[in-house]
Image (cartoon, rainbow over all chains, first blue to last red; front, side, top):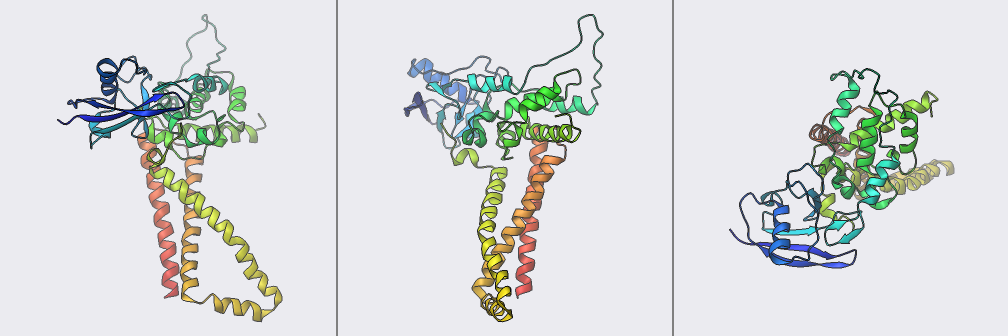
Length: 237
Length: 122
């Protein structure tokens, strides 16, 4: 097999692509390539990963211009010509090389009221949530988010409007809006109804297109819009 | 860092571009449309002379493009309303499949409307 021609972003916001030659192996992932460069060619390369199997959400990067989880992206899928361009996720400040500062990404989860607020105590019985209920199904479709930031990086609206909460935070809010045990619904809807909230979405659907976990934040954002409309018509907001 | 066209190269973004560009084009056309209608206020002859001018083949072609843009904007708008107001349970694969069906439908309706207008001309 021919060698891979790999360009990796070096520096921070200012920087440049550096070229490396990496042996092409069978079943090689993009994370394997980055790891090879860091361990064999240039130990000063900074990148993030933890689980290597698509669970932790640490290793997302821009691969040939598209945001992806690198641990489960096979080179054969994205580099048929054996050329790779690896850069940090978009829409986030770059700390070094392909490592981004994800603080604002997660701060926005908090701004979207992304935490559960219950009313029961440990002395109460378990809540009964039927698996076939509409709400439970909506939660099931959206709950497997691993917080990798791919959707946030792919979203054009985040680029245009940096305070936009983004697909992941709004998807999280949507799962809680459908949590029948949660008692902070009005507060949450108010948190996502502002200028930077769900109504800023332009339905480009980049999040749905790129989410490695097969979640559709677009569907959740549309659901939030409907929930806000319904609450407004009922005079609850 | 910002995304480039490689990230934006997917059907829903093309649909967005068509919707936005057709919207801008229609907005630019509206004043011309009102001006043409306004001609009627200055008597039949003035409007008639404009309408005869608009019978030229090149203007008819431009009108066909206009009808196509209008149809694309309307069908794209219906697609967006469906995405917004019809509940979308299921995973991204299902949502993507559905939105691509909507998109194909919108594109089909636009082309059919444009061709019908063209048939009417011939």
